[in-house]
Image (cartoon, rainbow, N blue to C red; front, side):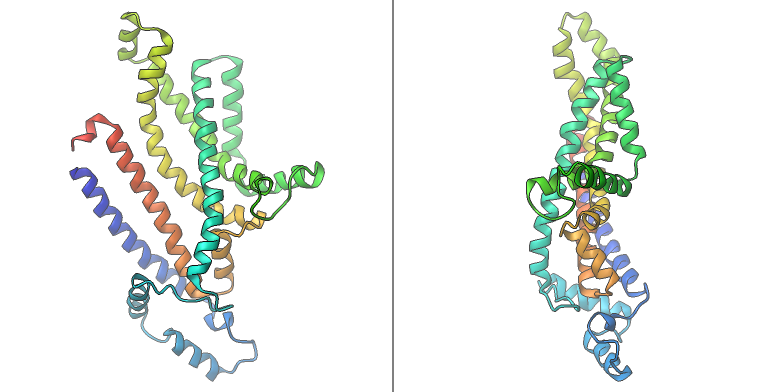
Length: 305
């Protein structure tokens, strides 16, 4: 329990530091926030008045505390470009990102773990070679290039799937697969490695010598021990999916949080950019916290600390 409490406090500290870093990075990244709302012909006086209205003429640290006070009180603000309510943007685009992210996350482990187990059970056979070749290819192909290749092949050449859009099952297939492929490849390699390590352990040899069947040894003992490092991998995969979603959602025109964030940064829409940056950071940090807690609960040596 002490370990869990310590990790929780550490996570809260990371969230605070991340919020400061995100806020300062957006404020100091250059550009003119008035361009998001005012026309190009606006006078210098109009732009200065708009900055004062937004509080941009105050010291950055004061802007931070003012913004966080409003955020914690439930006031998310509105977009500078079109006055859209940020809470409504969060519910709509967040739902779309949740659909894509959960689908990709499910594919990572629903495909990666069975393939890793298969490769370990068929070690040094053509099956193992084929699975590992797929894994190496999945890690080597850049995610943005794979997205463009998938659009060219499945949408332009074969006409099997739509090249962009949201949110039907057919429109979900390509972005979810592209988002999940590297995670699948890494999960295959880690599962295979963990399985082989446990299959060759002294504990497993003792179980075999005791007369237990190979299926019982693998299913009850080897798999359970092999899942401990995979649990820690889950938190990292959440961070990977969140990071890659910025590219995948933009390429496939999927209206999720990543696409909103990219557009907000390009348009200098401060309220939208800083809020959705904080949301994505919070998801990554929370995923790492959940993985660390899960690892502690799954590992008997850490469970009592």
